[in-house]
Length: 350
Ligand code: PMP
Image (tube, rainbow, N blue to C red; front, side, top):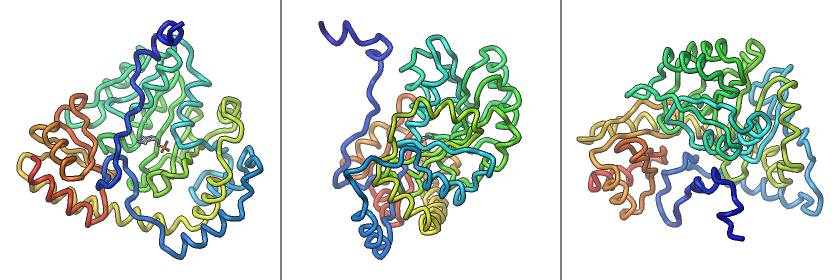
């Protein structure tokens, strides 16, 4: 028996999520925070982690960590929290709990690829509603399509990846009012956009808010959180693998989120650097910079493939979105030094 005979056709048709090698490169492809933790904090963290009992299973529901996240991240008291191994896992959990073959999930596109990947895993139908040419949200088109398709799940990245656009608050409200299914508002880039529906959860019975600590500076520990009503989260919790948040992640997050102001200061620096980088990129002839509220910038260049390869030869890794997004590159905001290297390389690679 060959795998091709056994594996479901919708899985055979997929490509695994691509992660290119990046050793030794200026890494501006994955929306990571470029700053490491201050040295004294690293030493304290090392002590905390040294005391973790690796021989024991973690607290299965990570109660202390959920309480800390609720307190630090402004989760309303009456709402529940579910933790995931990255927000990726929470997306998969939501889709697994709801979608069955033929179920419709919907999102504005282009957007984060995993929404359609998780739908494909379950044999669900992914309906991608195009954004306008300038990547702004086409409210009338989206609402019309929602009325037609009646999706079980709507995914909205707020702000969006890979475009960086933050949709109007009223656009999200109209989607929430019109939706007959669940709306997952993915606030992965909240640290940079600082707009949120967290405080409005109680207004909308069909809303859950998804966040991650990845972009804030802790991509390596793999921790995401979902906030919403108990009625939703208790169902999603059944789909979660036991002990999905390991002991080292729980201990590191308990220690670091207590000191989240350190990471928030870094996010402020990244926001400031985003403005400076956007201005510098905009001065390069042939480069169009799209407005972004996240920690990356989407740019259009005359020949994305050539520029991407040229940057790579100069040891700078960005994300090439071409041909899906015609001649577009997504550049994560780095440190001022990294961005200087990027700009020098880009001048040569355009
Ligand atoms: N949502 C969006 C919009 C993203 O861009 C990403 C990461 N690229 C994620 C979710 C997943 O992040 P993580 O699994 O690291 O929490």
